Image 1 (tube, rainbow, N blue to C red):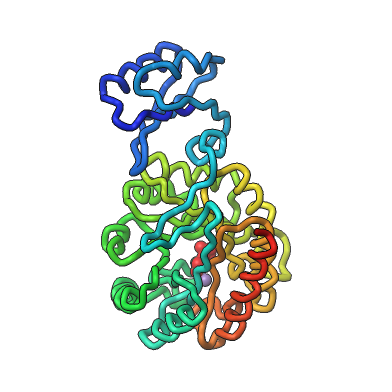
Image 2 (cartoon, rainbow, N blue to C red):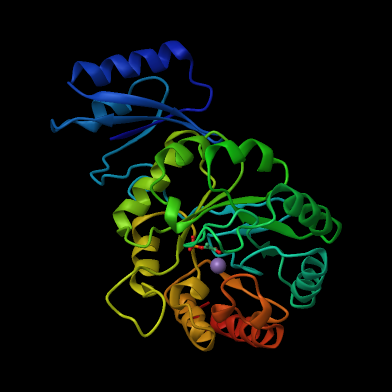
Length: 334
Ligand code: PEP
Ligand code: MN
């Protein structure tokens, strides 16, 4: 059960509500976010919601049987749009493309990517400065020096930044230089990281783990929400299956199902989702048809020379083509 607390309810009112919850044998978690306050009540007994609903300080009460609660559609009417500032929103009908290299490599590369984005009306640049790599000998990112330089150039050009945070200790140093914190597939169930990201007031793009279920992704999002941060974007980036003809199996089904089960925006990552450059455009378009609120994709001036993930990265011509096609796909489903 979710009890939505009225704005301006007093602590005494909330105390009385929590006592009523306990008196029927339920436990509760008192959750305060940047937008609201909720009591998440856990118990088995059938209860008459009206008994709680009439208490002073209660805005609304909802029965939510899902394992995830605040991320569920069962209580929130309508879809959530995550506000990135400067009039840029994602979700609830607003679509965004996030594009850029797998890794931030150099000043020249940042400038050239920004030019490409601006020429195509893209407002959000992706790129990793802390890279999770299968081999410790691969390029692992430019770290904070790269992020600070990137941030400066991006701000001069009104471009937002999304980049991956890999561990709790990086959150504070990165905080003022990112617009969206990305949680990568490998950290999708790093609950300590998710707890801490719940305590910042910045949008979080949460990727699905490569062996994570849809329900596990929503429960991971619940960690962020229940620690106080409602600004969450879910991301399908492909799962690992027995197939070897491509890198990952893009679970297009998950996009539609996540949009049904959750009010949060859902974006698709076709680059990691299929992992082969020549298929990325088709998978991006399929994701839009499945209902994606955005696409995050890897783009590089010269993918053959990219420090990471070149095999799935589009060059500027391919990116421009796809951006145009995505615009048309959006019109088709409008
Ligand atoms: C990335 O976005 O470059 C990345 C490492 O993604 P994922 O966590 O989905 O593998
Ligand atoms: Mn990558």
